[in-house]
Image (cartoon, rainbow over all chains, first blue to last red; front, top):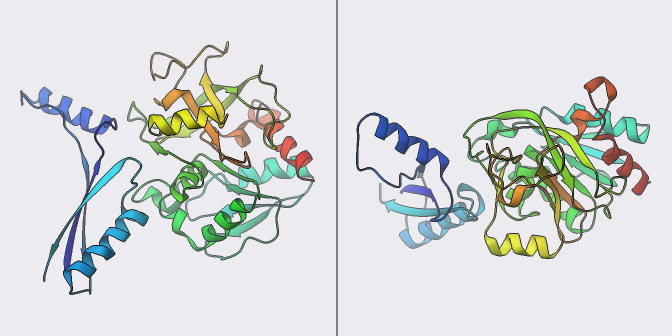
Length: 81
Length: 234
């Protein structure tokens, strides 16, 4: 099973990188762009075939390592391969 | 006093801090490899600065999961003093021994320079040789030193007197919380440069006291921390 994980900064956590990207977009002439937030994207192949079990397992990975839940949210998408 | 420095792949201040400890204790600390599973009997554990595991994923995140850290966490919870400097502070937050997180500097730049610090507490094994009137000059060298925690956590840290050091100007004026405009180099919440755990036995700090602990390095403001540890943990 393929797991696709998005790790993003929580609302309210300052994102200076996002701000720098926003400024660069504006410098390139892309107007009307606001509130750029950047994050991480991870893809994993997992042996587990049951979707509920796979989700529990990936959630555990996110809690323990892949995200720092003090400042980050994670979002998991699963796809049978 | 017995002390041990944990060495991770990518640590680069392990030998500097070993020299500072040896100068204070009169004998060298033990060096423990991250792949070991147990720290020998010890009075102090130091998590040194550097770029453990290339700062992959998040600074300190992979180191926090390395085999030796289970024993470090166990010993810290049992009361063994732990000093985490720079990358070591990042590891302490990643293990949960200290709250909050070190985010990228607000300037997005790596900053390597001397900063000034106010000593908030002098009743711990780390700082009993300082006075709260002291303004220390200590170098920082980091890209992720911007301390962040929710307001509830920050309020609790302040209420429990767990802020160890705050950035300030050379004359002791507030860091103003903002980089560029004040003495706060990285945007850290409430100018926080270092914090303690509840018991005051685990200290995480971004500045490097071991880098100004010898006159030949250009200053000695860091020396008193290692002397304090050597005296308190005899």
